[in-house]
Length: 337
Ligand SMILES: [Zn+2]
Ligand SMILES: [Zn+2]
Image (cartoon, rainbow, N blue to C red):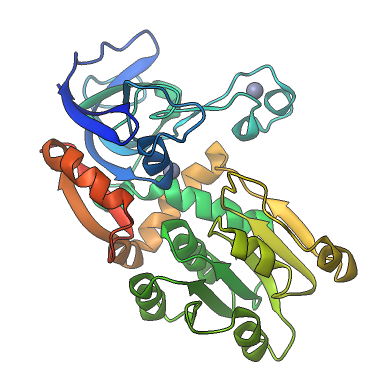
């Protein structure tokens, strides 16, 4: 079968590899679509600390069950919860397996979904409703990331939210925050296409190339600052700004990955009594609910899919994607072609 294989820094190849044979407790999936995530781009760049070549990429997958089981009929469309936890560390023992000390993911620590087939443990599969398209279902995984971030933040009805970074996660957080009742949503970025997409959803935008973030947020919040700030940029500048634009007593939710330590104004956290909370992936329960959320927001999510590549053409285009091609937000791989 064909698979998109990471073969070394800045190299991915479409390779012919053996079709997986499901072990006991596993289900063979025929993959339909798999989303390209920032993590895949990091692996491609050769900077991911765990991924080792050769590796089939992809953890944002939707597929159909090949051979039926007690739980799933043949042909049933499913999405895969891509996390595997150790079961024995403190987090796992206390009901938080998504922050397991040695958390492993499909497409990072083991073979992933950018392939024609993948064998997945049955208990990681979630059926999707008939009215959810394959393409939108491929966004369930990043939707779940956004859902957890909003729930971790404790966002309340009528809160004024600020989202730093209008990449796929930032825009999904903004959409989820609106769904959760945020009255005002302000999104900042440096990319004009991403900002125009944010504006098309009705969000207030800040173009960091020529607007001052703090000034703009204060102007939009009666001089108070945002009630909740989501850091979705993973940039040092965002870490510096996040405490400044949050109101006294407000919350900052970290939904991005700062690969290196970033300076943070701890004095703001003390003086303004800010709450700083992390958010990492999602629980199974949130993953289940994000299927519902993706259905509800399907029309908006459709706008985030800016490009679809066939599996056979994906390798040549992957480098292109990784260079943050203008006008790309979410790129999907069509694994049927
Ligand atoms: Zn991802
Ligand atoms: Zn564990």
